[in-house]
Amino acid sequence: MMPASESGPKTLGTLWMLNLEGFSLDGPAPRVTATFQRVDPEAAPLIAHAMELEDPAEVLQRFAGGKRCYIGNVEGMLATYGWVTFDEEWIGELHLRIRLAPGEAYIWNCATLPAYRGLRLYPALLGYMVNELHAEGMQRIWIGADADNLPSQKGMVLAGFQPVVDMVLDRALALRMTWVRGCPGVPEKFVEDARRALLGERYEAWRTALSLTSSSATVGQFG
Image 1 (cartoon, rainbow, N blue to C red):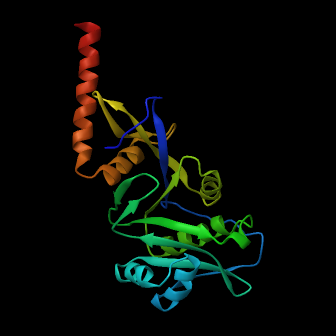
Image 2 (cartoon, helix red, strand yellow):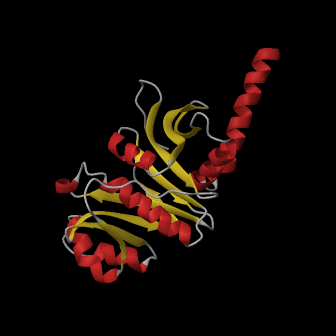
Image 3 (cartoon, one colour):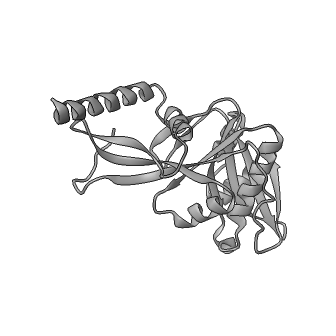
C-alpha cells in the first residue's frame, strides 16, 4: 500500500506478456551488426562495469541465485544487456514482486549503453532472449515497464509483447492502494494470471474486496 496524490488515479507501470504457444518470431533486426549471447559468471566484471557498479558482487549474487544474463556486442564491445528470472523477482517499476509459475520467465533490468542507443539493440536483444527461452520450453514471458518509459514500450512491441495489466494507484474501499487493472482487449485469463503473479496471497483478498464493492453497488441500485 502506498501514498497517492489527491489528483486521482495514477498509473505506475504496466506488466507486459508474450505467450509462446504457437509462437513464431524471427526477432527484430538491429540497425547495426551485433552478436547476442548468454554469459556466465566469468563475465561478472564486464557486466558490473556496464551496470556502473563498483564491484561485481551484486552481479555474482544474481548468478548464484539462478538468474541469467544475456548481452549484445557491437564490434566486440558490450552494447546492451538484460536479465532473466525463473522464480520470483522484485519489479521496481511496479513496486511489486512477481512470482512465476512453472514454464514462465521474467525479463528485467535491461539497458543499452548510451553510445549505442537508437540502434534497436534493445528489441533485438529481447527477440534473442525470447527465442532462446522458447527453445528451452518456456511457455510465457513477462516484462515490466514504467508508464512513461515509451522507448522501452516500443521495444517490447517490436519483440512481440503485449500489455496485460496496469498498476494503478487509486482509492478503493476508502483506502489508497495499488490496483491491478486489465488492459483493453486482453483475454481475462491473462489478466487473472497476471493478478495472481503480482498479488500472490493478496489475490484472494482482492477478489473478495471486488465482490463486496460490486455487492454494495447492487444493493444501492436495487435496495
